[in-house]
Length: 170
Image 1 (tube, rainbow, N blue to C red):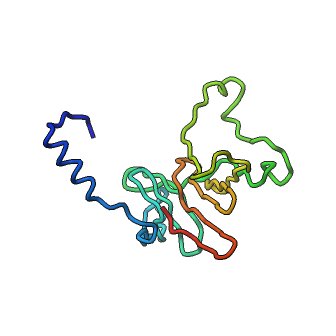
Image 2 (cartoon, rainbow, N blue to C red):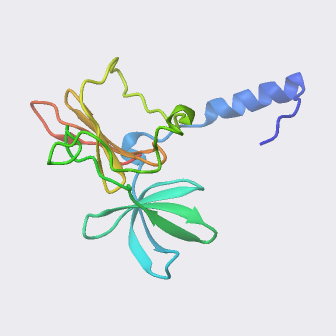
Image 3 (cartoon, rainbow, N blue to C red):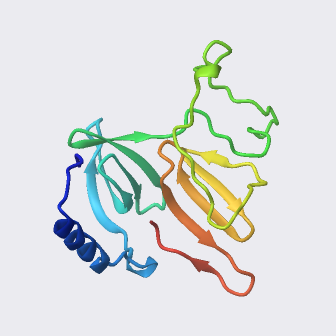
């Protein structure tokens, strides 16, 4: 929305209106069943657990997560180029990425695409894992699943010692 100047009365009315809006509580967020067309002509049906104008995270009936990017009226399925499935990267313990797009000549020009801070966690002492485009980050009794391409939260899980609680998707 482009910036424009508001008169004092208009600004007061706008603030009064915004204060009447209620953010949805976690229990209000329910996945919506949708069918989307993929750029290769196939159709995917499932629960849209997180959606914006640019992307969508879709859970299909086989419990598989599909990360989708909007391209016109269709979606393009995305995944990670190389998974990072353990502390060492791969099970063989290589501790480096096989991605070739980053090299000595361009590494200095890299900039963060997104940052996600865990709530109430000052430092992260674990290695994030990436599997099929989903980044899993943990702290204490919490696990966050993030779309590795956009940083959007797909799901947060909380496992207290006395009861198992799983929040609904954001």
